[in-house]
Image: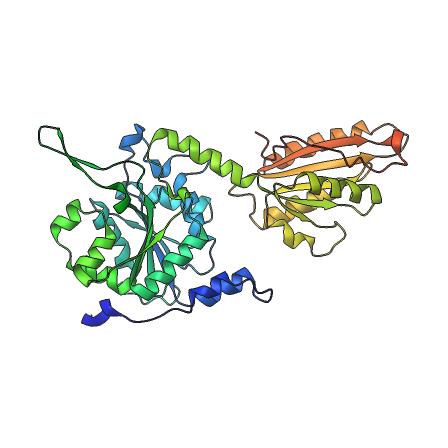
Length: 418
């Protein structure tokens, strides 16, 4: 290996382009322009869950019927500019991790066995790329190291970490200290305290030029392997690479204790409930109600896609919550069509989908109870495919000349059905 690799002067494109709001540039095009080099991830997942007091290691604990580590993997896998994700697990959990990869359709994951310590496990993950001959898994320019039990990492931060690592050789997320750090004597008395404003908590993710961090691990001592925890320190000590530190958001917290699982579940539920797609029919009354819903659900990310629009199926894969507004008497063919499309796209594998079917009755005839019976049967059927179907019937027959009331105020609409 060349000795000057730790002093690489390669530069990325100007990160300032990420701040551009030019209408000609989509978000995806900006990301692709900024990250024009191979990026991979190493996720050490060797924790025992001892502090949780649970027999299952925390990375494999279930949240909404899905292991915690699967959420973390998805946070990286959904980004087109990230290639291979190496998950490093204890040998006894290797088959379990392979089962998770298959069940939740993780297509970028390579599973390797870990070592007896955190640093040994990370080194095992890095060695996957040391003698690569497979063109489908190129050697990364930048490697991101992240904890398997930190599922809430945002793309903006990952972009900053990646670009800073490409430019500086190493980068890491930091957070302000929330408690004062003190030193104690051997007799457990106060020795001295540190001035909190001068220090920061080192967090994950951390990014490195691959050659730098790999060389650092090749040179580090047995003491580092056994007792070290800070990857940035290895890059500084053995390669002279001083990391660029980037302020991270509060969402970087680590699932450590049993109570953190409940907090993580609440965050995931809230995230899943923050977007909805309204698909109205062509009738004037239906369109008016759809507009009313759009106004009153303004705290959510909203798309309104006319049912007649030929390309509306493309929009279905952008969210997990749908409201279909139609006239009473319409058939359930739309529901079947949507469920089939989402099933073919494997869209309901990871999380449940929610469909609310709103039917308007504007005739003087009574609402058709048999249609709702059909809906109940359909709801039971699609539940087996991880789709939650709800029906609402609104009778406007006594005010047929009046459009749906604009004062309609739905409160506490829970799209997750909890």
